[in-house]
Image (cartoon, rainbow, N blue to C red):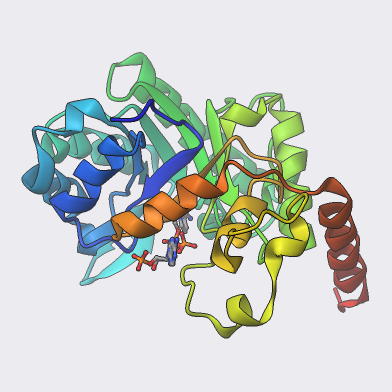
Length: 286
Ligand SMILES: NC(=O)c1ccc[n+]([C@@H]2O[C@H](COP(=O)([O-])OP(=O)(O)OC[C@H]3O[C@@H](n4cnc5c(N)ncnc54)[C@H](OP(=O)(O)O)[C@@H]3O)[C@@H](O)[C@H]2O)c1
C-alpha cells in the first residue's frame, strides 16, 4: 500500500460503483472519493455503501447537494430546507458523515446578478455552513461547472467555503478560468482548497485528445508520458489547483494518472495557451 496522495480525488460521476476500483484506489494511495446526491440515478450514496461499506471509513468522502428528484427528472434548487434534508439523507444512505459537502452548481439557480440571486446564494451557503456546525458534514464547499456568474454575486456577507471545485484543464475557457481565480482570491483560498474537475471533459475518447499533443505543456518532455497523462497533468495548472477530481473505473488508468504527477507543467507554454484562450474569448460576441 502506497502513502496517500491528496492530489487525486477519484470522481464517481460516471462510475459503475464497483468495489474493485475502490480497493485499487486505496492500494495506490488514493483515499479521496467524490460523489453526489444525484449521481447514479440518485442512488450513489446507497450504491457506495452497498459496494464498500467496510471501506468507506478509510476514504475522505465528498459529495454534493443541489439537484433533486422531481417527477422522474432532476431539478436544481438552492432552497436551504431542501439542501439540509439532502445532507441528512446523505448520512442515512452513506451510513456515515461525509467529510465534505459541496453546493452543486449553484449557477443553475442564479439567473441574473439581482439582489434575489445574491440572497439565494448567501442562504444556500449558510445552510451548508450550518450543516457543518451541526455535525452533518466535516466541511463544506462550492462546486461549479460554470462559475462565471459567481464573482458578481459573492459579497463580504457570503459564507466562505472550505473548498471550491471548478472545471479545470485544457477545455475550460478563459472566462471560466478567470472566474475561478477571482473567486479563489475573493475567498482567500489556498491552492489546496481549490480543486479542479473533469480534466478530460468527461471522456478520453474525444478525437481532440488524439489530435492534440498536450506533452507540449510538460516540462522537459518526459519520455514515456502519454498524451492522456499530459492532458491530466496540465489540468493542475488551468487554473492552478491542489487536487483534481478525475473519473475512472479502471485501476490501470488510475495508475497512469498517478504516474503523471511525477512530471511538472511548463509555465511558459501554459501561459501562452492562456493568452490564446483569452484572445479567442475577446473575439467572441458578448
Ligand atoms: N459540477 C460538478 O460538480 C462536476 C461536474 C463534472 C465532474 N465533476 C467531478 O469530476 C469528476 C470527473 O469528471 P468526469 O467524470 O466528468 O470526467 P473526466 O475525469 O474528465 O473523464 C472521465 C473519463 O476519463 C477516462 N479516463 C480517466 N483516466 C484515464 C486514463 N488514464 N486513460 C484513459 N482513459 C481515462 C475514464 O474512462 P475509464 O473508466 O475507462 O478509465 C472516464 O470515462 C466527477 O466524477 C466528479 O467528481 C463535478
